[in-house]
Image (cartoon, rainbow, N blue to C red; front, side):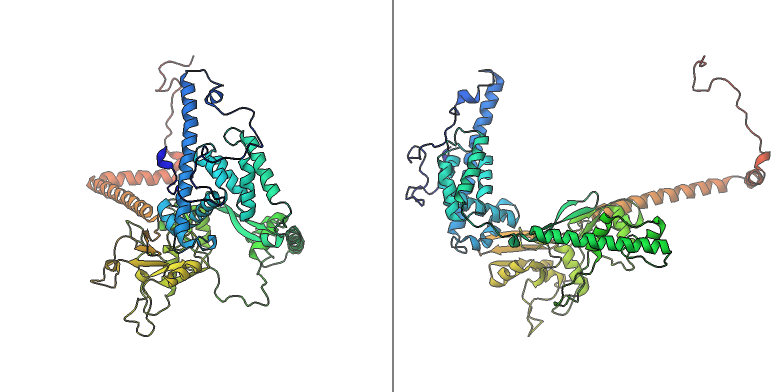
Length: 548
């Protein structure tokens, strides 16, 4: 496995030992925690018949596990070297943003996933060289090393090195998984003993979890200090009981008009108040947030739901898209659309689903352009970034707008606009990321015709890495077009059948048509006088023999 050897054999680690030295050339600490038996080939094959097909397969799986560990170590070494030698980072973990963007293009993963991998690689190679040596030679399974990194992810460098030293005293090539887990837990506890725990005030968080696109539901997960969470639950309980009491009083008195927190407008039909569970939800979701003394923003928050026309017409049950990223069921989309008095039409290319452009002549995009930008960029346009652009995002001119001479700078057009999160907007302004677009795709140039596909952007990251991204499109447009074409074909066939029947009817003798129409009119007027067809008893035509 020479292809997985360290590419820097001359570099030294923190202990002064040459980095990349093998277990035979480096004197490892004596095992403080030993395995009961050495993990030899005979031990691996102990539970299978020697020389059998199963024995060969078990041994092959074991060798594959060791090869995966060496490959994983090689991957970590590459990431650590990339990060350490990146001139834009200078080896500081707090400045790894640009490196993560570069790594994301190579690994085809998100920016946040790449950032986590870079951090883990630096931790494994630079701070935990002793356990990394076991991984490099294949004696530490990849999954075990992942678990080890998860346990030390929140520890400072000094404590991570202590955990590494403790685990170096464990016979890692042979111990069981249970022993490994116990020793990792013990090592973390010993290294972090005496440290002040993280205060609960630093754990306050609210996030959306458990998004279920089939049922159209999601959960709001609130984390914080126990007294604050219990106080919130108590206030919700008191408020819900107060509202429930008011609902009951209004129903008993026969009060007219809306009842408080009647979120479905059906309490009068139900005849009973909502449950406390439902009222807690209604109060939490539909109450006005009190942010005094801060003045509430004048721009209201609008949820963007894109519903295919075929779904609204009932032609099919294609899902709608919430903020261009989350599907919601068709029935839920119809209910949302039915409650709105104004709909806004969005035109898309019938083949690719690309949103057709609109224009503006000022620095600030128009409302229609901002709506389209949200559809085109539901997340930050920088490659790999997954930050949503619903609220905390900024519309950015790819070619800078010239305020003094608007005709000479970048125009306010969808070809020249995209949405960036605030962090990557700053990096773009600083020149760390540089986007460009093909001028041939600009509809304001040449004959003014637009391209059929979505706009593509070429990104230069720190002047060393280049990658391309494509704008978001409506994935349901081809489906909608197909459904409409199918409905049109059905309509055409029905129309052709109706015309054929009409021609056949017209070709019949008039006397025959008159006689038939008079007989039908007589049958409708006097149904009791119509002759009844009597079926004699006996076997039906489908029966070959009597049932007896």
